[in-house]
Length: 500
Image 1 (spheres, rainbow, N blue to C red):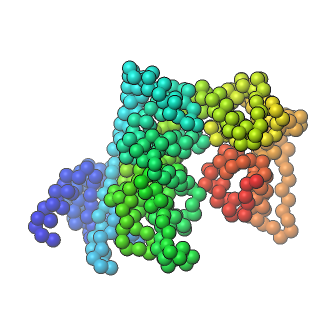
Image 2: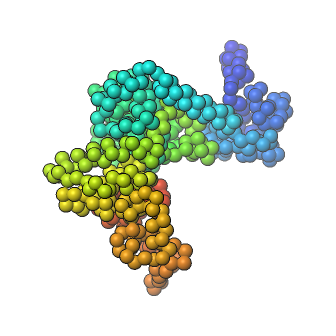
Image 3: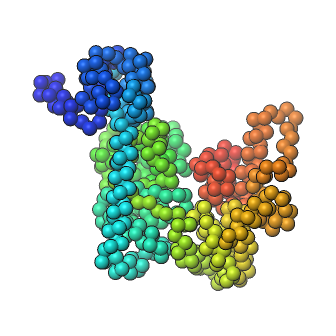
């Protein structure tokens, strides 16, 4: 390395906001950035006079990310506890010369910095919302907005602010991170963002990251060349990123991305190119990235399940979609639109009974818009010309009419504690609802030669099979069983079950 290169590297290390370590293959520390002293409780001279093995043994690094890279030869990310009691996110990368490891470069960031950034994002969002409320053009913008929305319902002030924010950022290529509970409509708003953008004539590629098996993920996302692996398409195949050329790539459930794919996605975002499996030549791609999650990505970063640098790249324009219970003004419009869709689809003209509206407005809809639409479809298919309240059964198994207003919780509790057979017969509780304490429990005898593990697996399959017969989607099953939707997908595949 020339003297000039050495000076450049030294300047980068000394002025970087992150805390850098450069470590030799035997663990000796060659150099550290000045800011590391405050985090790790030792001066730069003291750190450079020791090794990562010694620092880990002394509790200064718990554990050492550089030592993990030396052991594995692969990049690593983890959360460290330092000798000063701080928690930091540390990343380390190996440096090879041919096949020989010559150094490890690590950097760390105090989680305090991450928390401050999150607070700044939240503050910016609040200020933007206040600006929209104060703006003189808000009323006219909202009127124009009404005509431009296709199947979206934005009667509530909260959703109008979300829609206006999306409309204003749509002409840019900034990455949008959509946050919100499962079923709030993140995909629908991502499609609307695409329609508002200059890429509206290009494709909109919708990818559910939780639905693609990890073993196929890289091939599905980045494509592959002929002969890249056993079973590869004869002429190779474009990946989902390439298919989004000139349009929008929407990655739902982004928190489920495997770490290996996160690394490649980050590189694609940074330099705008992808490399297919089995190919060495990179290909340029031009797309707009929109992602969504119902998880706390910052928590997954702390757990070492999500890359910090990718989190920063994605969290450019964070947009939070509120749950349906916080925007009840949207419920009538959503109900009317769903009824219109169902009537058009099946060639009928059914309507709701008047007495169900109060109950519809009173139910909290924990599954949000998806639960509301699925509930209406089940009721539509089960009704004559007028849909009565006892047919509107959310994913809890209890009818909306029974759960409406302030009596909702009391009726559920009474039915479960008293074992009211009439309530059960009327559908007030789902057959799969767990028994209350003290209630009679069904016997689960073991078959001859059957162990506990096999019995539990059998019972799990029976419960899932029952859910597949009575619930319309994996999201509804997840809501009913209190587990994640990816877990439902995995368990259904494990037991060979399908919905319907």
